[in-house]
Image (cartoon, rainbow, N blue to C red; front, side, top):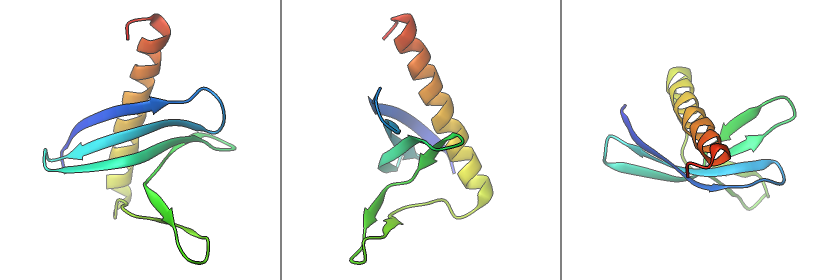
Length: 92
């Protein structure tokens, strides 16, 4: 798997939702609506999901292996941290 692009689409200042991200894999597949969320203990990456008939949120797309999840989370968090740093320094 080659993560060819990560774009920070929207950054929020208030609330637990911190950003909405899109990711491109192998220059062939785009994954939209990945969320960066402030949890109780840490900031984490949440895959796109939708609510089913029972009101439970289910991921639409998700990594299968822990290694893939780790790589995706690390790349997204790195892009987010760079974006926020650039925003704070006024270079965006």
